[in-house]
Amino acid sequence: MAAPYKKGNAKKGSMLFKTRCAQCHTVEKGGPHKVGPNLHGVIGRTSGTAEGYNYTDANKSAAVKWSEQTLCDYLENPKKYIPGTKMAFGGLRKAKDRNNLVAYLADATK
Image (cartoon, rainbow, N blue to C red; front, side, top):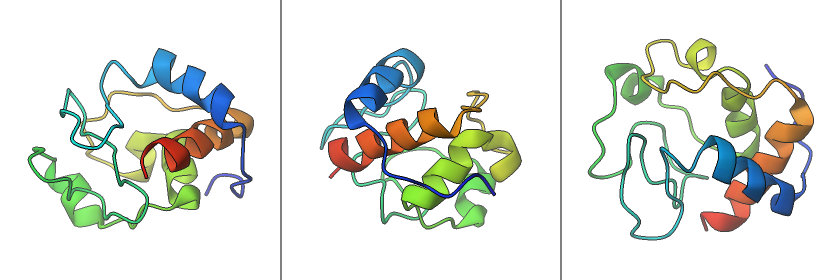
């Protein structure tokens, strides 16, 4: 498990999202799926359940309930957290970066 989630800086997280995530994900309500699913409403959702996105069996069967902490844990090393995921992202090693990104996602995906 990654370090405990501590609310980060959403503005810094926005920059991380733009440089590390936006090529594959959108956050706005009704936004399109890209290579990865739209993340609107991700907190509180179960992994593998965004309507209209074709998930791997690994994501569906993991049944992770996304919270700030589980997202933080996942973003450290997605392939280790959910073996078999098709997410190519290697993860964010620094807890501060994960906290900032999750703070942004918590705000931007409500």
